Length: 339
Image (tube, rainbow, N blue to C red; front, top):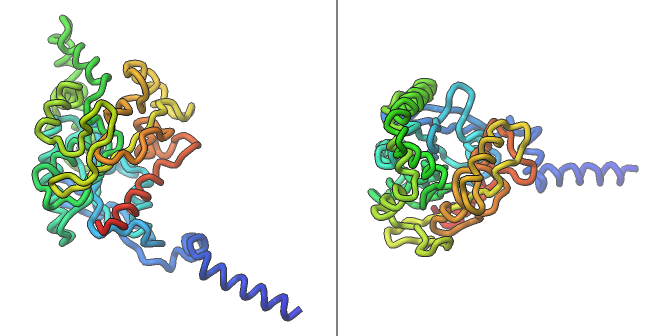
């Protein structure tokens, strides 16, 4: 009987020590140190939230800087653009800064806004470099910053970035050039700009909005112009991979999903299914699979749509894969590269 109890004690102790990832993250997470992430704009950064740090799996050498896509934000009330992703990275040891650019504007304007915030983040953190991560149009922003100050950027990670544009943007832009375009486009654009301004105000910031400029940036022609200025990481072939380590010293990575419809309870999935019909071949509903390729293509066939890729809306995603996981894995990849 004594031996039985002794074995139970030894087993329990072993679970607490060797199985700490489960126990520590659960029952004893309150004993873990807390860490916060910061939300930034062009003026300042402030604490966006905090969580318990339960591992060092994602503890990169340099801060991780997140850049949202078109119509995006850092946080509006309790709603975070990077739903669950920021918290997961921080809980695994990462130092994370969530940036905010204009919801709707050109790649260059949004890139300049991120450039200012990146300089600010470098000053606040004392880091020599940053790891930039962007989603959708935010991938143009991070490429812009890496192109202008590569000595301050360790890596660029593009999530569903329209590196070579989007057919959806082409269709909408062609409409603006149609006979009714000169009449309809300004009216629609004004409404979209007002919506973008509300997003900014809701997140505590105000930026000038220019949805038509943003639209052009995402067309095939607009993206081609941008790529001429910022070619690093762009594949030389139609659907190939780019260079991981570019001549500017920055490492480039990308991934995307190709499942426009993943959850019948998410109303946005129906819209993404409709827009996917405008894109020949695989896409996430807005960005063609091959257009998303930048640098080393980590994966281009996740079961995600364009919103799933940032765990939206509010985690209402498919059941096959967790969109938070690729971010954590990428942080660990960068950590192992001493970035």
